[in-house]
Length: 607
Image 1 (cartoon, one colour):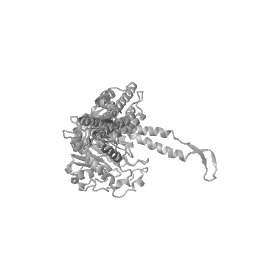
Image 2 (cartoon, one colour):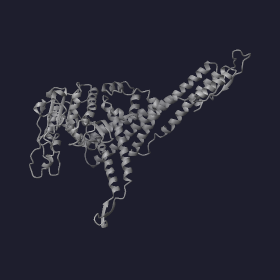
Image 3 (tube, helix red, strand yellow):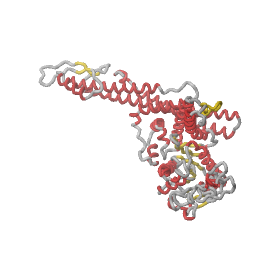
Image 4 (cartoon, one colour):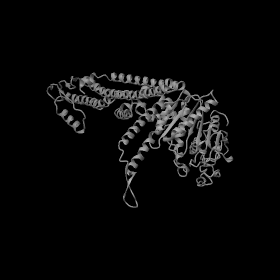
């Protein structure tokens, strides 16, 4: 960038453009919310049939378009502000150099050269006429030494001063040129396909665009105070409240996953950020899946008899290469199964009371997600359900269904008060009954995140919601460890169903009154100490006999008299059937009767 261009450059024009894109993003966000919360939800509640379903698909596509627009506008706004910040920094250095030069009797030319007046060194007989120098950028120890030597040799004392100013000008011009070179390709890349379909590839481009802008805008983003390192919900909330709207939107656009995970922030903010993360990771998974489909190897090969060593005519078997390919294909399919289940909730709710909020999301490995049915920031009652063994993102649809069923029943029983029902899969759950679930390490790693989450709900809910923690199976150990490790956790009730133990010996160890600790275990739940007798010849009693006489491995049985809590009744539940469905009783706590008991506790009653 030359001297004249930098001298007349107006960073404010780019900042104004950034404000325009930020405003456009806000309008896209408002349009998305209106479509999802008013138009689509209202239509689902009032209309049905093929025409209504077709309209819903169009509305869903339109909402996704607005989400994409909102996201890209945030990235563009940050890029323009980042570019303006870098150029303005160079411009300030240029202006300072020019001001200092002119104050020192020099004159800066239109090309950035510096003219110096005549001058005489001490002891000289006459003045040496003035001249003009052009600086060089990027000085180092060697070049600086040469400049000093030249200044000492030159008979005009103003030469050295002018050369210093010229070098400062050259440095400013180089800094501006470097900024222009850095930003030009990144800003040019911020464009969408010229169609009305937001594809998976478009979302992977968003991820790429965001990463590029985030790296380039490092200096600008460093002017925004980062979140507190301690990750304490109250400090997170204070940090967020101390940011301007521009700073908030810049941080969300560049760090959506970080914002989505910050306990203590408003649920709507976390939801917006996590919806972006969900869309980007879902797009990446789909692109990977489609690419993998294109690599399908030969499916079958002739069967070679292991006895004769000869090919069996007409017999074909899958190739080893195809088996490996198919296994990874299934893994990729499972990778976005849970993502689709979450999106399905956003595409199917019917009112504000059962609107979903995505309060946490990470699609890596087994995956994690925190989904609330209803807004926990405004709810009178908030119940957080922690699932147990075998829980993972791929199967989260069932857990969200449980949370939704409890929210519906709670509001049916207590229509005067609102209830938000959350499924908290914010940890890696054990994936084996006889192996992983006997260890505490999964709960050990979950107790601090769950404690922070509950504290964050209290921080964001300003009218004192009554909070209940509900653990199922291994999730009861997570709840128990969390409550026992936090003396002042804002939890009113704890519910443990199908528990292998909660990590403590007595209800009072959970730091709430024992009569607010509730537990139930179905008579035919496999978690029980002794397996029930086989009641028909098809019952797999042999399977049940594999269990020890004491499967309560994590402290005292919360349904025992020794534990000191409140035990409520639930049906015995079904025994395992001949199809080796060994979990029917262990999974029946959301059936009609036990669900009613859970809702009574959540709304402040007694089962």
